[in-house]
Image (cartoon, rainbow, N blue to C red; front, side, top):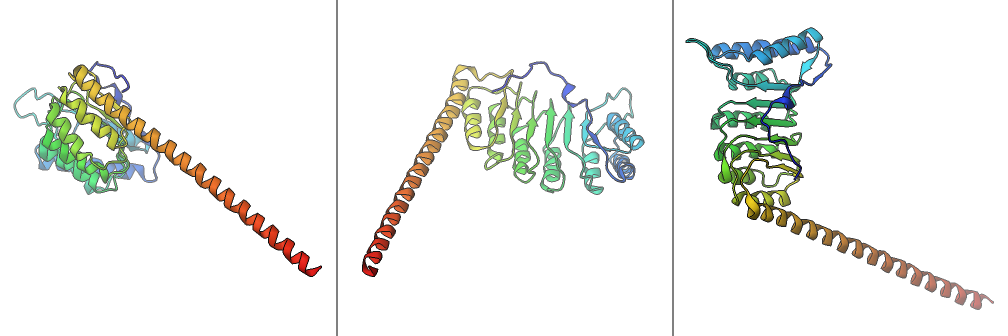
Length: 281
């Protein structure tokens, strides 16, 4: 398991990936207007960070592929919150297919919120490749709903769930939703209150999916949990190595048998030719 910094930070999401697209200014303008309209309908405010990023994209005639949503302080009575739903609705209303990375920080994600994100993934036309939910009070039931959608979104390869104390039950629900997944490559569950039991749970997920990077800093797997996780991976690696060796040996045997048959066929052909020559003589 690769090591990951234990410091909680938001540096990973500060760069906003941009690319040139024909009609980018109009595309971004329409998305911004839909987002603003949805905020008005839900008595919420547009994310200052996202608004600024979209305006910059309009000026540069580029599209925005990385979105970072986080709450803003409600300093006085009447201040409106930043909500996730209006943004996701805007993506769907405008069919904004340029989103690739979605970061949600310090936002209390309800099951309904997670279902909304899952439905976006399940549409199949939004090429999301990275999801990050930092300190979002995630629970097991909503995690399972989210991970079920991963099989449909084939572009998604990395998920970060750090600082969500969902514990062993959350890990179990996550892995249950991951059954049959062959596209996700990286999972981060740092500081998620995982215990010994999660070692076995996550180990089984690793051997049955394509995940090859798992970050678990700041948890409580202890020696037993870690040994269970590593043992499952080692057993699977040994099994796969044995199968590859057997397949290679089988292939060599088949090639040897084929060569032997060809030699025998050659001998028979040569003998038959000799007999015919004798008769003609």
